[in-house]
Image 1 (tube, rainbow, N blue to C red):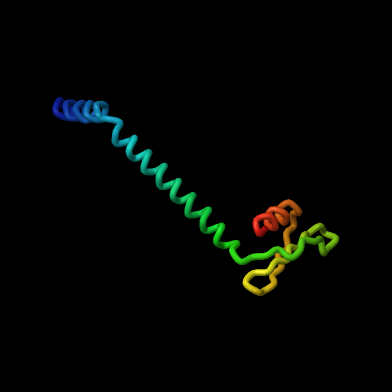
Image 2: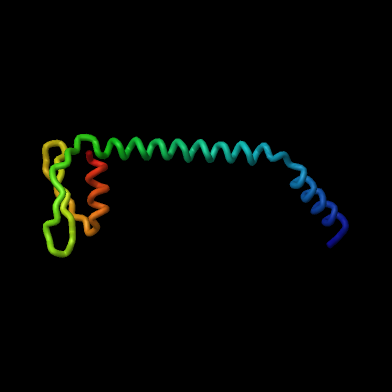
Length: 96
């Protein structure tokens, strides 16, 4: 390595070392604001997706343990089968 390359590398190292952390802090705040906004939009869209739904029944139709949740949405009746009882109850609670 020649002397000029060594000086240039030393200057680059010094300039990186002396940078203010303000840019990193601003970038971190921007990322946090974006994540909060994304979470807010996701929650709002989930609330909207269950609008107009009414729970009709939750029952176990088969011996295999699957659970059928029947619900009404915009006048039409739908049924959804879950293999897990807890998942079916969580879905039913989200409709109520």
